[in-house]
Image (cartoon, rainbow, N blue to C red; front, side, top):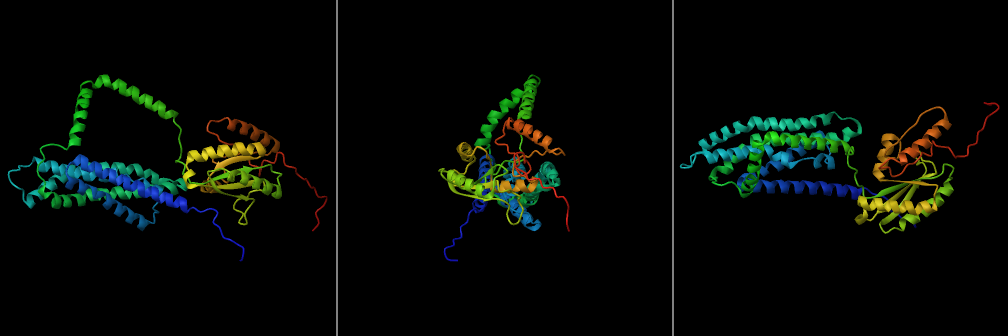
Length: 416
């Protein structure tokens, strides 16, 4: 209608585009790095080029398998592929063939039949350890396939994609590499010297290895002490199910007194939006109050989700933490009774779906005595606030009706 404008308040296109860009960037950088190392270590550009072909071959078969089994291509499924693992078996195959070629009698040029027999012998020599090694690596990912629930939805596609890529790399090493070596490496001449990088690494590694072998008993104790120290440090490290995905935008959840009506909540929220919009990092602010018509999120009028759309050059985690600290300090002075908690749009929705709460971690206390439950809730809130790593603690105002005025109505009789 005339005078009405349609405006997009929140879109995930930026997050999707950024994720795709990250996947493509990681894949391209990984492939380029592996290929560059192959050229440096093998020292023969034809051999390095052949081994590098294992990467697109393995990825082509893996992506074909993903399409066949309906596995989505995302940051988890594609980002976990290690190109170094994909070329390991091919490197062993080609390197062993080159070694056997260098050891042959170079007075006569070998015929096709001689090169075929030499290639067959060299492939048989390393086939068993190559296959065994790749199967051991593949077995590491098999337990991931047994995960269920949300973790299964997240990590099973990654394990399936990696297993298909490793199986394709084994096929490339056993079938493709020998054929390419027979065709392309027929004019390879004997190399009297190793590549410069390999010689430099050998000059460093060989004396260190000899020193350790001669003094292996004396060096066992420092190695054991280092292992114990590493185990102690590992036991003191924190843990996380998975790194937190930066969505680029943030949500400031506000919990006000349970007795706050819709008019008062809207009035306060308008003032909150104005305060937040005044920061330079913020591009736009809008809020959501109350329960939607779909009733998927039972929010009272005293609860508000403030969506803070950030400028794209101000959306890193460090900036978001500093911004929330400034917002919390600024609003605490004007609205001391409300509690603010930071989260992200998609993260907030997933928390609601998984545990029925908008918080990252939820503590639930069950019982029949409401007063006793409120006492325990107060004590738990004080204890949790003192735990290291806690940013904010909020008592759910939907159930914590400690200070809410209640009207108790008892009927004398029930009339039909």
